[in-house]
Image 1 (tube, rainbow, N blue to C red):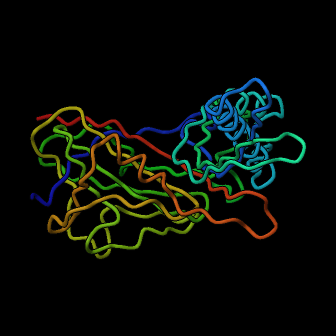
Image 2: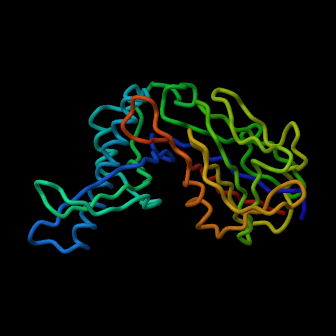
Image 3: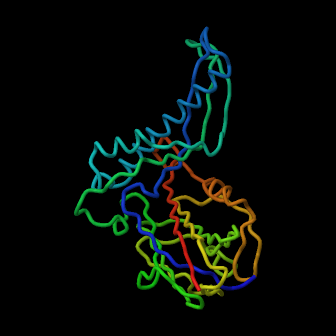
Length: 282
């Protein structure tokens, strides 16, 4: 395992919700009545849970962040009305007898609500500088350089607008996933908001150097206000290699450990996935 990684391209999010989502636990119920089958009732309960998740996510973003400083009320409603709701896990499902409606089904889901991307209000500044805005995490290179030749060493920097947990994964051209953070010598994956973190730095034992094979690769940053879900990793000297299929890494990372805030009715956490397309050359 080489102690060198190739990185070349910096991408900046330009619109609100371009990489942001909300992971939330939501419940839905439905009654059979005289016309529905059990499967139809269960499907209706699931649909109701997904709709409730979208509505609760919109309420959470509106009440817990200063999103209204960056978008209009109309745009915010539109963003969540067209949100993509993805079921991450079915937590619980049970049949019960309602006194009024008879045989009924109740389901609790963990879902990810990803609003439609919308433009921010002009002249409102960058959310990365506002700790009360929705979670925003950015990654950039030294001097914002976008192209690197073989042998060049790369310095990366990461910053969030509020405290967050993060996993940084470098996906090689052959599909190998190298976990940059956390790693065997830098295991803490909790970061303070408003602080710039260098990769590598401190106790890190690796360098980011452009080496063959050259071509299209990427770095993915997963970040959340709650602890991230676990993925299988193998120790590869100074870094970890993820032992999951690439399509499973994001899913398992989204298995975050969310807890209910005191006085709140739902378990909710903010989530961000940033993808940096990369290209190296000889």
